[in-house]
Length: 383
Image 1: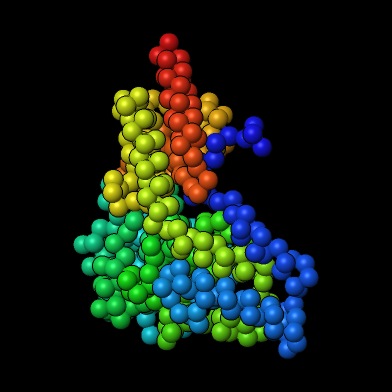
Image 2: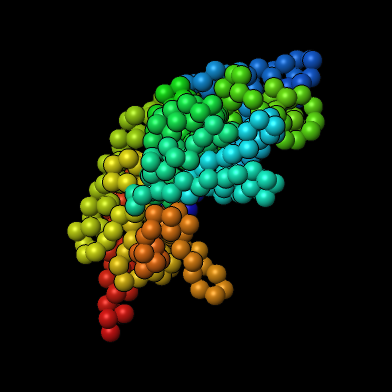
């Protein structure tokens, strides 16, 4: 384990917290009941699911009865978009989203567009925030759903959700918020955001992969997108994944208990890393909003090198680039392209995302490794 690189890719996924693993362990063994069974095994499992439902709801200021457990945030996003579209297809035929959404939002929207729905994709400014004048013009009387993420997974930029929701509700539209990247990192409250639907991903805040949740405000028109038994208010058929749901509940409880202090700690570490790199690397550029940004996220463009080259030369860290490699070369991230970042800047981007187990020593080590690798690469290029 000591030979592994410093992990700075917490926005991709988080390790399962040991307390979360401990909480779910019994439900992988002797506590194996089906929550729908009317005997002690089933009743015990049902009670555990409902406790977790309350813990997850508390993380976002919602009611337990409004939480629907899903297999992932992708499934939750699909249920929100397709479910609302099914419920409102005879009344409204217009959808609104932003240009920086996760594929699990953008692709369902595009799919509905092929089926005759009208879709407006809102542009963003150079920091990655939705242009509010465009939102004001786009949202209209026949808009069924507006779906905008709370915080971007690549840049950490946070959106003005309350203002967008106010526009949506003024026109009778529903507001869906993909909070997969934000929940557990910053305070999230469905009432403060005026969200009708809100998505969570367990593996983004130290629960296992394969579990998520969708908040559906009471009275929101939505229909299931799968057929089966009457689980999860009839919206998500399938026997509940009790071990992972218990884990999600514990992860939500741990996140809420330490949310403010941990956010401040991560922001201090992130800013220290940024400062070290800015001082040592002339021309280093920040991608994303300078202040309205997740406290753990640092997306930087390194001058004179491609992000993948820098990562390949920095074996001491594990992080992500802002571009995708293909057989014919590289393409820039859709998010950075939507922000009108130049191709050179986008290709030089790295996303460094910190988390619960990141230490000061690791930040020092990462800074040294990146600086040394950048200097080696640019001096070689100069020769």
